[in-house]
Image (cartoon, rainbow, N blue to C red):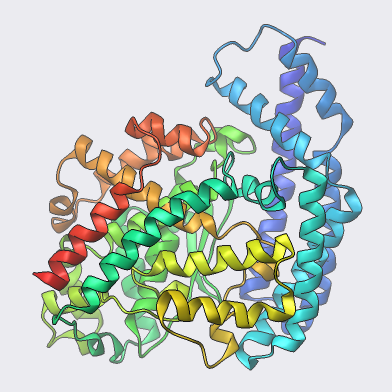
Length: 502
């Protein structure tokens, strides 16, 4: 069989597998939104069965045979060409999947589906004891996965690499140290300032229906295609891309607090426009797939913060916000803008301000790293979590639902995932600097409702690239330099220096 024929076989196999995976994504979205309480056990078995089928397809020996035929030919020469990228990433995925035994993949899929259902019940009840057994099982299984995959230095690297190709715990620790030192210095200056926003403006009455209506108006204006997506309510917001023409956003509303619903929508929309920006002709292949969670997060954090919390953004949307919310009609724009950018150490990651957000990530990263290293037992995780919050943010949760139980990630087996949030902040700030070099003053454009230039820039530079480049290679390709934390540090110092120091 010629190399081209082998490639066509791989292409068809990959696309068929992607269609099957879409059923799993749809089932996962449904489980988080509309599945009846008594339907969760059956859904867990459904997901486990599908995981078994997908694992069988991913480890089919014929993949290895076809890859060898393609790789041993002189057909692929340009490493960034579509075919070369697909072959490279198919090889990476095949080598990864064949290292994980089928029984382990199935057992982990069942445990995480069960774990998410248990977490949804346990969190509102502050019920750590009912969640702890399944969490122990998930961490144990995830550790087995790391061992099966293999690593050069430590288990965490094997897990992190699945979400952020090429990244290691050591790299992350070095970068986070720079961000932490800069964050602490800025936070001290803010806490020493006499300027304080009136955050009570954000705790007036904001009806859920008005929040949904305003949120949809905003994301449609920015460029999210609501005919190719939808918006629903869940316990923990997420975006799920089912496939071309079907990208689903979720959020949660609090009628006495503006931020969670609105900024949750804009954040998930950032993920959503990335999903909608992938080229549909490459669906089911690496070239039609997002390269990493850190790059994904760079898109959501950019639209949520660098755009959605900018003064130019609110100058454009302010009159519209006042039309939707009568409770804002006596509020001045500048006061509202200061309020949505308030800096105050808090307990909840998804509601954290831009300055302290990365400290929330540090807590999670350090706790899960210690758990995987065997330096911390699951039983002691709540106290370790609370102690780090006290040390880094000066706060401690009186209820465990706002402590170690607050995130869905561990129940879903997403261990090694959390660093990608801060990496997203870092990537986003660096991309934004380059976008301004290419497009001019972006905030001035936002003030006039011009969001298309930035959206199109990100589609061309990032979304359409699929998995052509690994994260830091993509960063170098777009910006001309390696990951540089100083871009985020400069942005935070400039923005919050103006707000708090005048």
